[in-house]
Image (cartoon, rainbow, N blue to C red; front, side, top):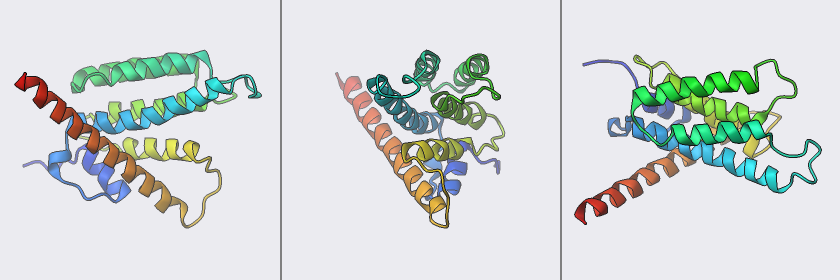
Length: 184
């Protein structure tokens, strides 16, 4: 039996969530990342609605392009295909928002974190903390966190646990819906 930990076990350890080996699946990782990407999509949508009053004019067209590619990436749970799509998105991100770009496109940065969670979380063996890092990255932007104190880490982990809970619930709904379709 292998002692290799998967991305969900590593995520659970990072955020203080009780791990159960039945959670370890590409589908669960995809579900968690989908929840995170949903937050980024919502932030982008709000920025679109406020574009007329924002100093920078709203979200970049490139962030929309990257978001569409990430959403498409998450339409499968096949590890090889996820990794291939993630690599392609990382290449796109390097073209449209290189690491040294100024100003930084935070929406693309958050999406890139989500892509890293998939790409490096599915490596074998897995040593990736990227899923927890992506949650941390997005949490900071959702709540506008710029200063850190002794409580910040705990709040971030609590938020990540709530997102993981939402991902688990989405899997239950998917399972129920799939079972109903099979009955028909």
